[in-house]
Amino acid sequence: MDDILLLEEVERYLRGEMSNEERILFETNRKNNAELDQLVVEHTYFLQGLETFGSIKTFKNSLTEVEAQLISEGIIGLSPLSGKAKIVYLWKKHKRNIAVAASIAGFISILASGLIVSFTSKMGNENYRVLVDQINKTNREVNKLKSIDAIEKSGTTKPEVDFRATGFLIDRKGYLITNAHVISRMKNIYIENRKGEFFKAEALYSDKEVDLAILKITDTAFKAVSSLPYSIKKENAELGEQFFTLGFPRNEIVYGEGYLSAESGSDGDSSAYQLNVSANPGNSGGPVINGKGEIIGIITAKDSKADGVVYAAKSRNIITLLDKLKKSDNQFQVIKIPNKTELKKLDRVHQVKKMEEYVFMVVGN
Image (cartoon, rainbow, N blue to C red; front, side, top):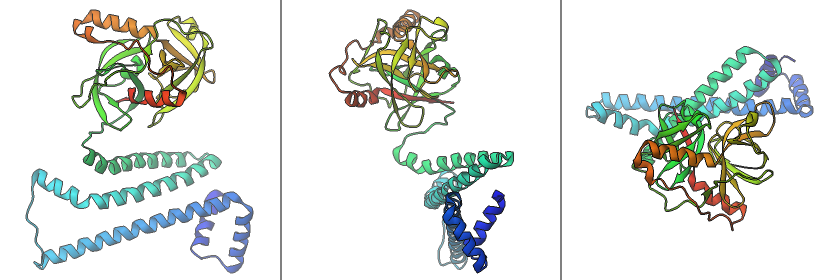
C-alpha cells in the first residue's frame, strides 16, 4: 500500500471512522506487521501532541479575552510601560507560556521528523527531504527559545555557533592549542567548558603547515587553574603505542582509544602521525594521550578514504609553535608548558576524569 494512503488509513482507524470489518482487518494486519504497529503508535503521539497544543492555545486565548474584558470594565488596570521596562515585563509575563509552547513544538517536530524520514527512506521523494530540512530548522529555533530561561538564570551569554571543534590547555593561565583550520573559519572564538560556561578567546599564532593554532582565553570570568596534570612529550611516540583521545564530535565530551599505526602522516608527512582510532568532525584539535599521561599528538584530520585512519600533529610541534610565538612578542615568554604528569599511576577511568577539566569545546561563528 502507498505510504500516503497507509497514513490516511491509520488516521481513519484512530478517529474511529472505519467500519467494523475494516477495523478487524486493520487490527489483524497491525498484529502481523511491526512497521504498521509502530506507525500507529507514532501517529497516536503526534495527534495527541497537536491536540494538547491546540488546547493550550485555546486556553491562552481565553485568558487574553478575560484580561481584556476586566481591563475594559475597569476592574483591573495596567500602568503604561515603555522602553526596556516594557520588554522585561512582557518577557517575565509570558516566558512560562513560551517554554510550554516551545516544548510542545519541539515534541511535535521530533515526531513529524521521524514520520517523514521514514517515508523518505522508502519513497525517496525530494519534497519530503525539503520538509525534513524545514522541520530541523524549526527544531533548532525552538531549542534556542528553550535555552533563554536557563541562560537568564545562569548569567552566561551563549554565543551563536557555526563551527565546533576541540582544544586543550597548554598553560594554566588559559593558553590552548587547537587546529589552524578550525579557527580560520571563525571571526569570533569562544571556549566552552564541561559546565556549559562560555569564555571569549582570541587566536595568538597559527601555522597552516602543521595545522595548529595557539589561543588565549581573554574573558575576565575565566580563572586560571592551579596546574595541569599532564605533560607535553618532546620525543616521538613509538609505533604501536596505545593512547586515548577526548573530544567534542557532539555536545558532550567523547572518549576514544586506539594505537599509533604509522610514524608519519598523510603522504609521509614527518610532522604528523597516522592513528587507528574513531574520530568525527568536532574531534579536530583534541589531545592524543598515552598511558603515562603524556600528550603525544593533536588530532588534525580524518582520512575519508580509509575507515578508522586519523592523522595527528606530533606534540613537539606545540613547542616549536610556542617558540615562534615568544620570538614574535616577548610578553608570551611567561607561557610555561607542563613537564610533569600526575596521570601515570592512575587507571584509565581516573585519567579521563582528571583530563576532562582541561579539554574544551572550541566554538565560533
